[in-house]
Length: 227
Image (cartoon, rainbow, N blue to C red; front, side):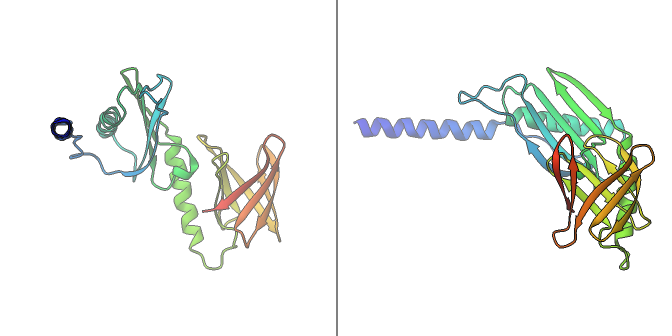
């Protein structure tokens, strides 16, 4: 008798679960502008399923080129709906759209948010200039006679980036900021980077590990790895 009741309860639970899954609203991805999904930064959910209003849900995506606001709105609405479906009770959904090849820099082209029901889209025009610099730098790397140091170096700790070009110019970008141009020269493992206003910075180059090392007063030793 008890086993029979348990079987009936189990059957009811399974049926309800299947029904709930079948009736869960599906997120439509048709007619969206082309994008590449990069990553998700999930909010912290408590053991009882509660999400604090201060918690962010962040989606990182990549787009090939700048988009009109109408296209960005479509992406914004899609990921907000996706976030609310995946995280019940989420209050802050953020979508960062990076131009192709610039995610490592940390400066998104568009920041699309919904906070407490209010939507906003911000455009960062500097991201276009950053993409152009990366594209130029990529062309320099194809030169077989170029110095081994030519390329892009990324610090995972601070998300800052050094980029060295074959014409002995380059740029340094603080995560989320604008690129600062410099000139550079190399003497063995010693690299000297010279900014027009800020002056010179000394770096150490390890050709075997493909890294740059910078000694700083504020952050100590920073390692930049070649990408």
